[in-house]
Image 1 (cartoon, rainbow, N blue to C red):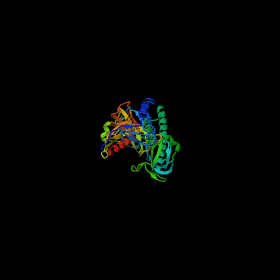
Image 2 (image 1 turned 135 degrees about the vertical axis):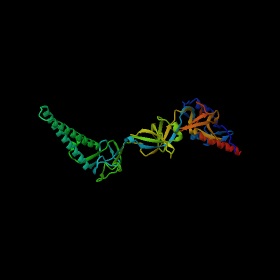
Image 3 (image 1 turned 90 degrees about the vertical axis):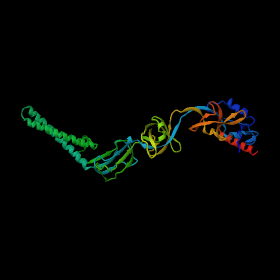
Amino acid sequence: MTFHWKPLLLAAASAFILAACNSESPSTEGDADLVVVETKQDDDAEVEGNGVVLSGIAAQAAGIRVATAEVGRMGETLNLPAEVRFDADRIANISPQISGIVRMLYATEGDAIQRGDRLALLASRELAELKSDYVSAAAATELARTTMAREEALWADKITSEADIQAARAAFSTASAALDSAETNLHAVGLSPASTAAAGNSSDYVVTSPITGVITQRTVTLGEAVSSDDTSAGPMFTIADDSVVWVDIAVFKQDLARVDTGANVHLTGDAGEPLAQAQIAFISPVVNQASRTATARVIVDNRDGQLRPGQFIRAQIDLGEGMLVVRVPKDAVQIVNSTPSVFLPTDDGFEPTPVVTGMEQDGLVGILEGLEDGQRYVAEGAFTLKSQLEKDSFGADED
């Protein structure tokens, strides 16, 4: 069947109405005018000669709108899968710094905590020994200091021997070294000498949180024995701060050369809903041999909690400012006679004109050839005009 190209003629007053679209109701760039046509008694379209007559009701129901073509910038983008992850610098794995028995638990999974909050209480014989060692070393050091001071006073008065003063100084040096060692052992488990002196020989050790965040994992139970020497054991608690998250984008090997750090990224959900905007902060130099992708990472402010680690989303990467082209809504381009076309208003109706299309972005199509900046075209209702044109053509072929 041969497809005939024919203008779509609106009713007898269409020329007047099209003129009204261009003069009586001038639109600013991008505005669309509803095309009003002659009112007929019926609501359907009919074919007269080489044209189609539409009633006013039918045209308005079809939502035919004419707009002015505008030039805009269309940049190329990549739409890629991505995964939300915790920022590794905002995760704390809390392992026991000292051996003991879990006597109390103050928090569990899902609890929001602040830095310094209590997590657990351990009864630790090791801690009691460390505290005892420090107290003994402190006392011995003080005694050695007093003895050395007395011997130095006697030495000044020529009452004591040089051997006695040297022995006193050596004893003080040895005691000081032992005290330094005891202090170091306390610092290793997160305690200060001042807190140790105040607590006496208590064996209670409080596990606290080093960061603000949420407990994502707790592996210990009441009465459980924990050991600082067991390197195979997992952490007692895992705490994560998700106020800032990483989004890792899987960039295919062939696209890596087009992606740069600092490029803008638009993050969307499965349904296309916008989630966040950020910039690429890091591109991995390593390509995964299984997936043939490398990771491009963006760092996102997530204080609203919209992104959840482990969530899979989409990332649209802007590859540059792009080129200036005429842009029209995607639905304004219809395939007529196997050719992409837009409908242009004429003196007596609408006529399809072939165009060369470019890239699509945000519901718009770039027109490389066939439509000029400032030219009037059908922005809405092009499919209706195409359908009527095909209907008219089929009728002509049957005749």
